[in-house]
Length: 528
Image 1 (cartoon, rainbow, N blue to C red):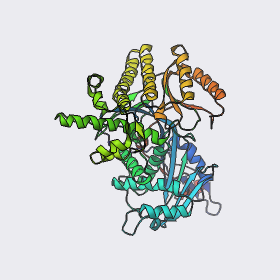
Image 2: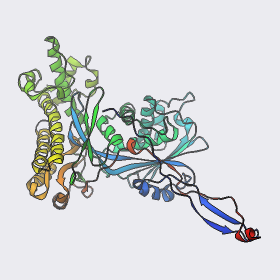
Image 3: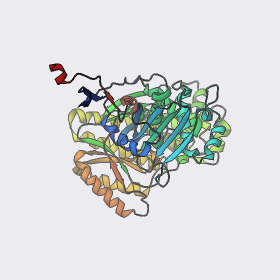
Image 4: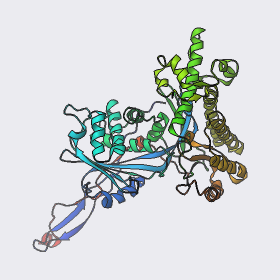
C-alpha cells in the first residue's frame, strides 16, 4: 500500500498578554505573546525537560523543532524478510525524542540525555567542516571514526552519521548551511527488544530533515524507512529490519503493521480489536539470542532457497523469490528434498558465493546450518502471520472469542517453530509462556510468543483488557522465580502510538518572549 506521508497540520493558541498604564504618559501598553503552534501532549515530558537539561545549548525563546519516534516490537514473522514473506509489528507508546535548532555559526553540538552507562549525558561538539567536506559530502568513515574516538564518542556519533548518510544517499538531506544544536532523549526500556536503534535513528532523521533537509512540510515514510536501513547497513554494518523502520515511521494507534516483503513491500494497517491488546512484556533480562544467531536463522532459509532455485533452473522452472511464495503442499510434495538437511557455511559458499553475494554476506563459513528446518519455518511462518491477522479481523467483526483463541494458538505455533526449527528459545521464556497458556481464556489471556526472534527478552501477549491484572501477577511471580537473571524489573507495555512520519514534527518556541503591542491612548485622554 503506497504512502507518501502526512502533511503537518498546526493548531494555534490565541494571543495572550496583559495591559499596563505608563505613569509618565498615561498610555495603555499591552504586552502579548506571539501565537505558537499547539504542542502535542505526547511531547510535553520532553519539552518540560529541555530547560533544565539543555538550556545551555538551546535558545528556548527562539524557534526549534521537536520530533518523536515510537518503540517497535515484532509480534509474529521472521527471522528475516524474504521475498513473499510477511511480518506483523506494533509501535509502542514509549518513544525517542529529539529537539534541533539551527545556529547562526557553523558550530555543531549534540547531546544524548542520560545516554551514558551511568546515566550521564553524552556530548559532542565540533564544526560543520569536521564532518562534511568542502564539496558537500560527509567525510570518509575512517576520518569520522578517528575524529569521534578522540572524544570517546565513536559508538553513538557513528550512529548519528549513519542517519545523516542514509538520508543523503536517498536524496533527503542537504549539506547543512548553518550549525545546529541537537538534543536526544530516549524513554525506551534500557535493554533491547523495542527497536532502540530504529527509533533513535528515525527520531533524529526527522530532526535533520526538519532543520536542514528537503520537503520540510512533507515526509515520505517509506523513503524515511529506507534511509534508516541503508544508513545502518553502510555505516554501522547493522541489519535493521525494514518492517521495523516502516512501523516506526507509519504506525497508527491501536493497529499493527502487516508488511508483505518484496522488491517493493506492501503494507496494511491491521486494527487491534476494541477491548483487547497486544502487550509486550519486557522481562528485564539480557537478549535471548545473539545477533549472529538471528542472522544465521534468516541466512539458513535463504541458503536453502538457493539450492531449490538451482534445481529449478536445471528443470527450466520459474525461480522463487523466497519461502513465503511456497505453499505447504508444494513443500511437502517434493520441494523439501532439494534442500540439504544440514550443511556447513563453507560448503555452501564454495557453491553459491558468486551467484548469491547478498546471502553470502550473512553466511559464517565455520557454522553448520539446518537449512531444511529453517526453510520450513520461513515457509510456514508467512501463513501464520496472515492467519493471525485474519483471526483478529474476524473477532472484530463477530465478537466471538473463539477467534481470539485461534489467534493465540497461532502465536503458540510460531513460538514452537522458533524453538524447534530455528533453535531460538530460552527456559525462562518458555516458563512464562506456559504460565500465560495455563491461565488461558478464563483469565483473558489467549496466547504469547517470544518477540523479535529473541533480539531482546520481550514476550508478546494477546489479551483482553480484563486480563491485565492476571498478567501482572504472572510477571510478579516470574520476577521472584528468576532473580539471578533479571537485570531490570519486568515491565508491561500495552499502549500503542502513531509513527514518526504520521505526526510530523512540532515547530515553534518553547518560551516565547513578550513583545510590546502598539500603544493606545488611555481612557482619560479620550475623555479630553
